[in-house]
Image 1 (cartoon, helix red, strand yellow):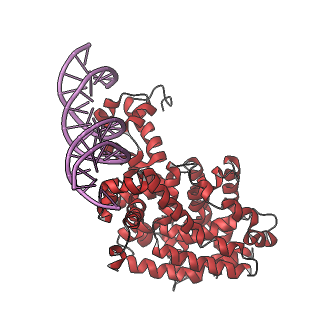
Image 2: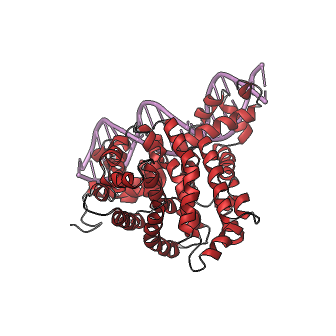
Image 3: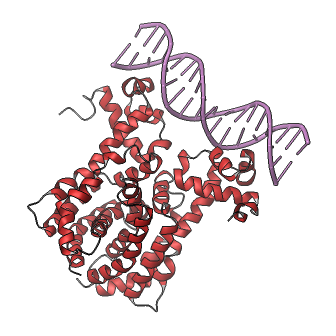
Length: 200
Length: 200
DNA sequence: GTCTATAACCTGATAGAC
DNA sequence: GTCTATCAGGTTATAGAC
């Protein structure tokens, strides 16, 4: 774990720190000094390597968006799996990924608000909606219903607990370990629920 | 009640503008000058009436948190309604409220991240979990399951689309009117789905 | 590539006239 | 209560030495 910082190039050190600080505080509340301090490098080097705070942020943001859709896309595009199996896979992978990056959703969504158009083209929403086999499978079962309804519900059940996490953990009701255990339970529960929903 | 803009006191004008700007940009990205401009008042008056940016923000934040729970609490505490009826009511009211305040959830949740402890006590999460009749009704049906699972899923299905709204609307796939229509459909769909989920 | 020093600008807040 | 002018402090970014 120590090598993780020792052997890194300066550029990587800055990126590691920028990921951490930007994700935690958001773009506007982050000072370049915070990132320099966090990474142990000199403030001037940040501009030397990334030109500006904006560009450094953009680099982090692109990564985070890729994480947000990286787990989703392959499964949704897959054509050789049953609908239920895909739901299982999406839920399982997404929860695992979010347990490692709990503040990813709230970070990406709240930054999107302040940089309205800059990052939307990085999101393969069109592809999901128009080309995904997953959406087609939904349409087969519910031809007269907007398929987005089902996708929204699945993602909502998976992602929303992470958005609410600060409320539940800080309030002292559920601790970090309890939250993790709960999300592992949801890996089994959500696919069952989705199956039931699809049969209505 | 007074005329919406003409008869407002200066204090009210500032509050109206502060709600709008803070909600749209978040605390850190908001400049007191933005609020002064938006409300048409002089910058110095902001400090005259609210002492500081922090205190003005706090006033707005308290209001927004109250909105977020105001629709929820009465229904969850109610003891004379069936579980299914309560779900109907919560979904209906919450969607209506969020259609009027689409960026409320992402605002409150993302600001909570930057002001971790200051506002958590304003949220009646304990009351919901420990005293609500709604949670008890869930426990009756699923005594061996954490009742939060079901609450999370209901709220996730309702709230998550609003969190994702910028993605779907800006991408040109769904416009404002289409989104609104979809959320009205969900008022009928979600209660049916929850009913099915509860029977597993 | 890395550092120090500083420029250039912005932001919250207040003093003081009216 | 409201305005203008301005201060004090903080922020990004860069120039220039090493």
